Image 1 (cartoon, rainbow, N blue to C red):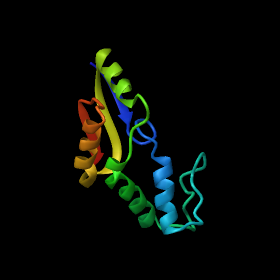
Image 2: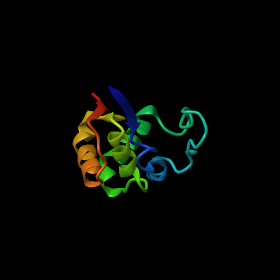
Image 3: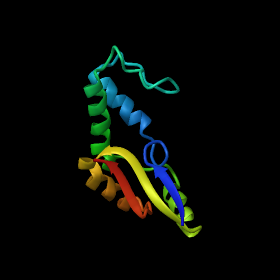
Image 4: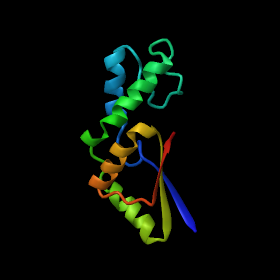
Length: 116
Protein backbone atom coordinates (compact mmCIF):
# COMPACT_ATOMS: atom_id res chain seq x y z
CA UNK A 1 0.00 0.00 0.00
CA UNK A 2 1.25 3.48 -0.87
CA UNK A 3 0.89 5.94 1.99
CA UNK A 4 1.08 9.73 1.85
CA UNK A 5 1.48 11.61 5.10
CA UNK A 6 0.31 15.21 4.84
CA UNK A 7 0.70 17.84 7.53
CA UNK A 8 -2.01 20.47 7.91
CA UNK A 9 -0.12 23.56 9.02
CA UNK A 10 1.72 25.33 6.21
CA UNK A 11 0.88 22.46 3.80
CA UNK A 12 -2.92 22.61 3.62
CA UNK A 13 -3.42 26.08 5.09
CA UNK A 14 -1.31 29.17 5.83
CA UNK A 15 -0.95 29.05 9.62
CA UNK A 16 1.91 31.55 9.88
CA UNK A 17 -0.06 34.81 9.89
CA UNK A 18 -2.78 33.75 12.37
CA UNK A 19 -0.12 32.26 14.63
CA UNK A 20 1.97 35.41 14.52
CA UNK A 21 -1.09 37.46 15.52
CA UNK A 22 -1.76 35.08 18.40
CA UNK A 23 1.85 35.29 19.58
CA UNK A 24 1.74 39.09 19.44
CA UNK A 25 -1.37 39.14 21.62
CA UNK A 26 0.79 37.62 24.33
CA UNK A 27 3.94 39.63 23.64
CA UNK A 28 4.10 42.06 20.71
CA UNK A 29 7.91 42.13 20.95
CA UNK A 30 8.28 38.40 20.24
CA UNK A 31 9.94 37.81 16.87
CA UNK A 32 8.20 35.44 14.52
CA UNK A 33 10.19 32.33 13.61
CA UNK A 34 10.19 32.60 9.84
CA UNK A 35 13.29 30.68 8.84
CA UNK A 36 14.84 30.81 12.29
CA UNK A 37 15.13 28.06 14.85
CA UNK A 38 12.36 26.85 17.13
CA UNK A 39 13.82 28.61 20.15
CA UNK A 40 12.74 32.00 18.74
CA UNK A 41 10.29 32.53 21.61
CA UNK A 42 12.77 32.14 24.46
CA UNK A 43 12.98 35.32 26.48
CA UNK A 44 9.63 36.47 25.07
CA UNK A 45 7.17 33.67 25.88
CA UNK A 46 7.09 30.76 28.24
CA UNK A 47 6.75 27.33 26.70
CA UNK A 48 3.22 27.23 28.10
CA UNK A 49 2.37 30.52 26.34
CA UNK A 50 3.85 29.24 23.09
CA UNK A 51 1.78 26.05 23.28
CA UNK A 52 -1.33 28.06 24.15
CA UNK A 53 -0.81 30.29 21.10
CA UNK A 54 -0.70 27.22 18.84
CA UNK A 55 -3.73 25.67 20.52
CA UNK A 56 -5.71 28.90 20.14
CA UNK A 57 -5.01 28.99 16.42
CA UNK A 58 -5.95 25.32 16.02
CA UNK A 59 -9.14 25.83 18.04
CA UNK A 60 -10.18 28.55 15.60
CA UNK A 61 -9.30 26.60 12.47
CA UNK A 62 -12.84 27.01 11.14
CA UNK A 63 -12.18 30.74 10.64
CA UNK A 64 -9.52 30.12 8.01
CA UNK A 65 -9.47 28.83 4.48
CA UNK A 66 -6.99 26.31 3.09
CA UNK A 67 -4.38 27.06 0.50
CA UNK A 68 -5.77 27.26 -3.01
CA UNK A 69 -6.11 23.71 -4.39
CA UNK A 70 -5.32 21.97 -1.08
CA UNK A 71 -8.31 19.76 -1.81
CA UNK A 72 -6.85 18.92 -5.22
CA UNK A 73 -3.61 17.78 -3.58
CA UNK A 74 -5.31 15.13 -1.46
CA UNK A 75 -7.72 14.06 -4.21
CA UNK A 76 -4.82 13.64 -6.65
CA UNK A 77 -2.96 11.52 -4.12
CA UNK A 78 -6.09 9.41 -3.64
CA UNK A 79 -6.59 9.06 -7.38
CA UNK A 80 -3.02 7.75 -7.65
CA UNK A 81 -3.73 5.03 -5.13
CA UNK A 82 -2.36 6.59 -1.96
CA UNK A 83 -3.79 6.01 1.49
CA UNK A 84 -3.78 9.51 2.96
CA UNK A 85 -2.80 10.12 6.57
CA UNK A 86 -3.30 13.66 7.75
CA UNK A 87 -0.79 14.13 10.56
CA UNK A 88 -0.78 17.02 12.98
CA UNK A 89 0.78 17.97 16.29
CA UNK A 90 -2.64 19.24 17.38
CA UNK A 91 -4.05 18.27 20.75
CA UNK A 92 -6.72 15.62 20.60
CA UNK A 93 -9.25 18.10 22.02
CA UNK A 94 -9.07 20.06 18.74
CA UNK A 95 -9.59 16.92 16.68
CA UNK A 96 -13.32 17.42 16.09
CA UNK A 97 -12.88 20.99 14.86
CA UNK A 98 -10.07 19.77 12.61
CA UNK A 99 -12.28 17.02 11.16
CA UNK A 100 -15.04 19.54 10.45
CA UNK A 101 -12.55 21.91 8.80
CA UNK A 102 -11.23 19.14 6.54
CA UNK A 103 -14.77 18.11 5.63
CA UNK A 104 -15.99 21.68 5.07
CA UNK A 105 -13.08 22.32 2.73
CA UNK A 106 -13.42 19.04 0.80
CA UNK A 107 -9.99 17.84 1.85
CA UNK A 108 -9.95 14.08 1.41
CA UNK A 109 -8.16 11.81 3.86
CA UNK A 110 -8.32 8.24 5.12
CA UNK A 111 -6.92 8.79 8.59
CA UNK A 112 -6.34 11.76 10.89
CA UNK A 113 -3.55 11.60 13.44
CA UNK A 114 -3.43 14.04 16.34
CA UNK A 115 -1.33 14.05 19.49
CA UNK A 116 -3.10 12.42 22.42
